[in-house]
Image (cartoon, rainbow, N blue to C red; front, side):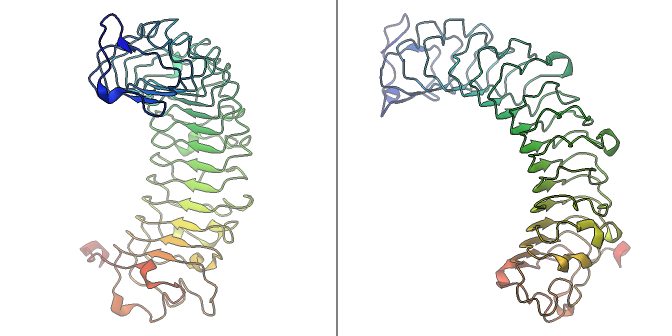
Length: 397
């Protein structure tokens, strides 16, 4: 094996072992000409490689994984013949380079393509031509915006199941989302709303991340989720929502709306869900005692196993808590709770309670004023966290 044009051997640490060559962080400034019929993985990340010559990788016919992340590759670094001989390549990593557009010629055998932390600023109708076998596409932390993503950019992706567009400059969900996608990441953008049409074609979507955007109640259409009949997980954290969105997908199992401005949980928001919510995370909101009522959790009393109400404005343990049949983890820490009523958490004769983890720290509780059997339904005392507690401030006295 020699460096192209230099007749210089690879560093000793880069020699192949069990079909793997790793030259990660070896300070290489150019890509060696490598010829080895047995190599299936090649790691050239964290170097200073700026160009891939057409012949450099032609001697690796069985290569399946190529990592060129964290180099200095630009748009001209990967010519039309640079990867054409890699007919077995399934995984290509180009993270952390200086690429502004998707390379024109990529092996059709690719199943996974990672181009996070580049300078991608456009996706045109031909960006993914020939990549019908691609299952996972990661384009996080680039410079994509509404005007530079074509509605037909994703049409060629006939098999994609995971699509990550987090950390771009999108104000709306791009049109033409692939109908095969099952996991969609759009966190840390500038999304302002969700229209009825935005996700209407995503009938197989199971996990949707819309956290860290600018979403508001009035900008989410009442039928925004109506076509998402397979959705199981929805993350709306770090937005500007004051209430639970309407008409949540019937299939939803996990809902996260942390770090918003929720003031109430509308009654019967979860009644239509089947088989019902399993986890509900509402930490760091503005929920007070009146905002959490018995009807707030109708439809989730038998299914919910994890409930986070920490860091809100509660002064008492909601009476509805003891109605849950299978709740295992409950977080009420970081509120203004002063006392726990005798049967608030553990109703009498409730020997079959499933609660195993309870957080009540950072409230205004005094242990000497707690009822003797307030936590009797917890099978293990280590599952209860009571300390530390906060001293009451003058406005709470």
